[in-house]
Amino acid sequence: MGLKPYLLRLHRWITLVFALPLLGIIVSGLVLSVEPLAQRQAPATALTEARLLGFLDRYDPDGKATGLSVRTYDQLVRLSGVGEDGTVDVGLSSGEEVETDGLAEWFGWARGLHERLLLDLGWLVTASTVAMIGLAGLGIAMGWPRLRNTLGGWHAGMAWLTLPLVVLSPLTGLFIVMGLGTGGGPAGPRGERLPISAAVSAIARDHDLAGLTSLRMRGGRLVARIYEGNRLTTYAVTRDGLQPAPANWPRALHEGNWHALLGTVFNALLSVVLIGLWGTGLVIWARRRFRKRRPRALQSARAAASG
Image (cartoon, rainbow, N blue to C red; front, side):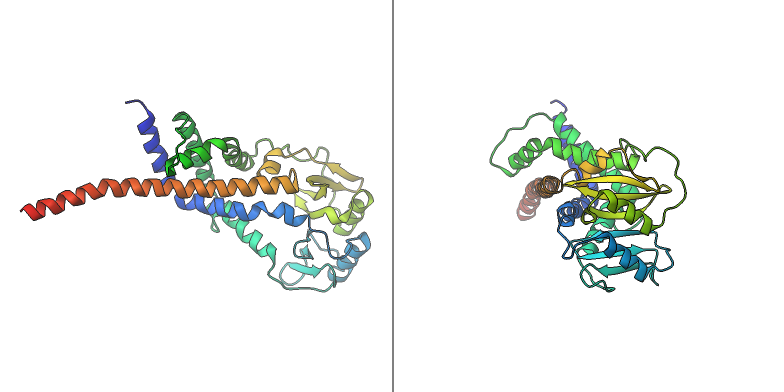
């Protein structure tokens, strides 16, 4: 009979066991896929060194800020480590403190769902990621399918035609969790902590601040993430200037930051395909279960009628 029926059964059971966490991961991935392109929206007001330093002077006069992030899709700058709540959102145009539930709230919710399922369930996300890779492996092991105009044919066809992306997405996610291929941090000593205002001035010497997305402490270093064209690059900010960090290709590929436009398109299309595979797979299983139960129900009805 061969191994295919057993591989198919294992494929179905893995899908059923991880159906709900996989759905959460895939749907949140679809939301997050548009973040790189959203971040490339031009600020409504020119984001200059003087303007950013003005925000810091006004809302962080004591120089206690631990970081900042620029969210051009919401037209605001978030200062971390200041204010009563630990953060202050400043409108790019007005320069005033603002309170708004913009796209950042949706992206934050999606990231929490994608990484922890909104709870402390990172282990389940990792297990589901491994399961997704296993499902792809089982699909490969079952061999090239017959491409027919049926639900099963469309399911198999979608999986095979997008196989590299279907494997690449969970694989890079697993690499991020395991710290593989991340390139590590910039070489050299960490040195003393640099004030955020001094870091802004250091970045402004060589880069357009409109491309700055975040400036925060990571691993004891002040790290800036800056868009250069459509690619997001990472630098360690020191008193001597900016030091490029090694390329973190797993994260760039997984998040789509290797190219804001193309990365967004690829990740969004992949998420739609994965939702299609998830849905068609469950429908195929449900149909199969219904077909198995229906003959039994008919037999029971006939037996009752004859009795």
